[in-house]
Amino acid sequence: MLECQEIESALRESEERFRQMAEMTGEWLWEQDPRGYYSYSSNAVNQILGFSPKDVIGKHYTEFLTSQDKAKQQRYAISHMPFYALTNHYQHKDGHPVYTESTGLPIVNADGQLLKWRGVDRDITARKHFQDALIDSEKRTRLVIENSLNAIVIMDSYDIITDWNGQAEKMFGWSRGEAVGQRLDDLIIPAHLRKAHRQGLHYFLRTGTGPLLNQLTEQVAVRRDGTEFPVEISISPLKLGNAYIFSGFIHEITARKAAEQKIRQAEVDLAIAQSEIKIAQRIQASLSPSAPIKSAHFEVVGHCLPAAQVGGDYFDYFYRDDAHLDMIIADVSGHAIGPALFMVETRSAIRAQANRPGTPAEMLDVLNKFLFEDLDNADYFITLFYLQYDISARQLSFANAGHPPPLLLSPFQQECSQLDADGMILGVRKQLVFEEKTTILAVGDLILLYTDGLTEAENPDGEFFGIERVSAVFIQHAEYSPQAIIAALLKELKQFRQSEVFNDDITLMIFKCCG
View 1 (spheres, rainbow, N blue to C red):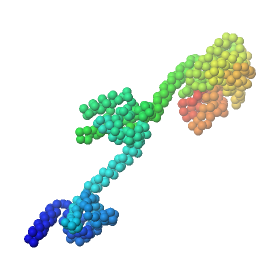
View 2: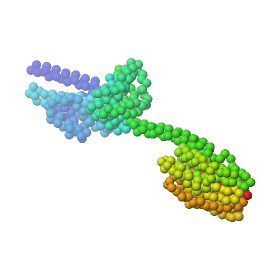
View 3: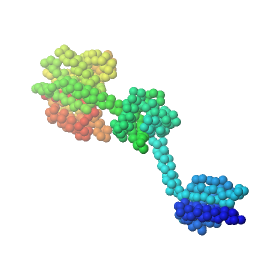
View 4: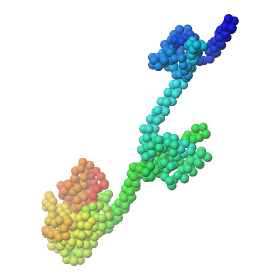
């Protein structure tokens, strides 16, 4: 009997010490009867759940759990097995959720009968929120990495790949499972650059500096199939403890480099074209007569207004002999150096015949046969109007090779007439027939020759300057000198265009019969 009393006394002392220790700790110590009703609760329950020990004792432990955890934890009430670090989701007295980490041990007698439960709950709400926030952050980070338009590759200090996003899979051809754990230089760096990469990595690990780090640089990478391609890459080191990790953000720039190459080639082509234009302008300027011809019988003057892109406009006048003056205006199709060279060839052919007898129609026939093969091979053609003036007879002979017909204005008339004759452009067929016509000029008659750059000049609304406007200005300034008439036409044209720049050359030539 005495022995039993001593055992009971020792047990009471043990439980008293347990309760004293419970009150000294911030953890919630509790006891439950075999059915799961609290028989003891330390004061820490007030800190954790907002309830006093009196509020808890006599209540079933599931009453304080959330509805979701009630069903989940019910099985522990009928189990005789201990549980460790079980996460419980309680509801605080004020309604906010509380997470605890719970450990419980069953107390059984010698016969194995469950006497009670004894356990402890530790408040892990703050830790749980932190862990959840960390998980969410990692999920967001992963989402950003996987949805990045750049390939993102992470490696450690040993050049071993530790992360590899979906864009890296597409760019390099290696799956994440294949890439992680492999050496970076073996997978994406061309063989001839691997030594430099390793030296750069070792240098950084020794010194903490690297010329390619923390900046955007252009490099060359290699795909799984061995093809090399240009990339733009930024590498950022991050020190963790005594080691580093390196994050690489890689963007393929194949399309951009191709575009840059096209731009560079376009710049080269433009420079060549500009050089050709300058050459053509010099050629064009050298072919034109250096000064007007003015005598007691006639006056002739020409002017060429070059466009931004030089065309093939050409005008000329010269004495064939003492009795005849030849006048030519022509337009070679196309722009730049090609048409300019055909202008040279045309002028050379004309001047070669200058000291021989020849009518306008005969001259056009000679020119067509001389130039046909060159024009046909080069896919060019020439429009040309040829006039020959018999000075003493005041007779004008002319033939046309598809050129806009000149305007004839008599001082006794208020409208212009056109000088025209049938004839196809030069270079279409080798055998052509050119009609030749003649007319007698009166003193004061004016002839305006022009290229289509004049009539086809457009204003901002897309309207052509047109032959009607040309005729109106010509008539309005008929009393002026030939130079002044040309100046008036160009002034009117620039006002119409609202620009000093033209898309095609504009060539004008005026002949005036003086007596």
